[in-house]
Length: 135
Image (cartoon, rainbow, N blue to C red):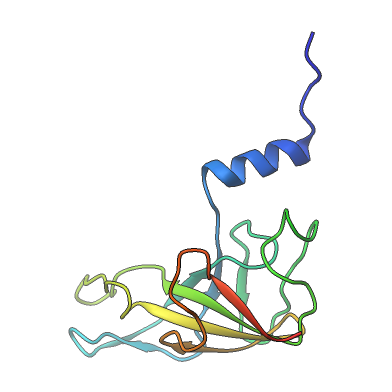
């Protein structure tokens, strides 16, 4: 008879098989570079307790277990997190390719303080989804 897996072990295994993400609703309307219309948009990112949590600017990142089960460094001074647009333009249906769909989220002590188009602090590797600028 085998020992049953703990829920934490199952959660860790599921994360390896199908990575999850969180969402941040942009505070300003996004302008589609194709049709130039403004619309609300959500960006997806992987940081903190990654279980499709919905955030807004000013919210604090949720941590469940801490590393290695959660993604990132809890309570780091300043962190930049790579993000990507969640969906296509609601007017023309155009889905922007990376890097035009890339965003960067700025965190200070786990508080979400800003989200900007582009990636300015990353080295553009698959592993580099976030960087600690100030411990």
